Image (cartoon, rainbow, N blue to C red; front, side, top):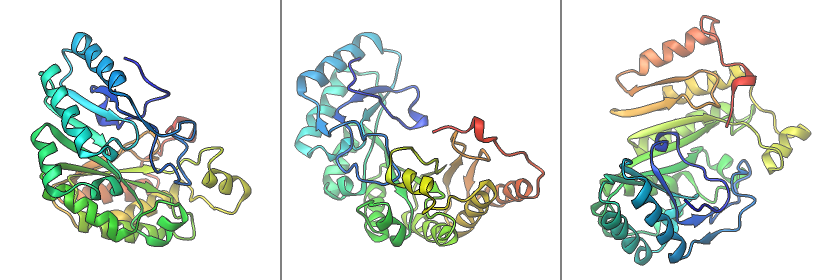
Length: 289
């Protein structure tokens, strides 16, 4: 498989065929993210994509999922996506589902009918980074979105019948806005009602604006206990049913997962045990992006 630079994918796509259809991220201005800083955004050529699909058809016949990389493959026009999905269905007939990252702008650029057509062609799951539900924090991190614009995008995905997985980032409001971040994010997640919520913990990256702010002391990162309290506050503010909640990423201090609202009380009890010292937290040396 021919890739341009490093490839990033959701943990749940570990067994997927990774087809890189765009390079980098079309937004690429979030202050916390350094994933695509070394890449200039571009759409890969038809020849590059065809070469990788041909490789997958020959060597990946036992893999039944496709993930379209890089940061926001959904930014492609509908006229580009339909032939791509049709080609995957034709040349990789064993594939049962196609997933991709989709930022809110890309989602809103598609009509409901277009999203439904992509679903009919195999689009099963969209991963969207909410990061925070607080407008002040969204402005600070240069997300280019508001809470309302994110809710609108999330609801459109759900209305199209596509599985929506939303990522949030603990610690993004710093110590000062920790509770504000937690409560607002819980509210937005409730209004979005995604099928899956993934909570990661902020690990500042060197060379990013937020990483530099942590280094020079202008941004105070919550410690492990404060992160857990923030997670608890966020969970308390979420009122959703039949939603898979995961905070078991390698960046997290306490790996937990469960089903909301069925397991909500049990998850909160686990966090309380950790806060009281009854469960050991993941040491810093073992945390990773």
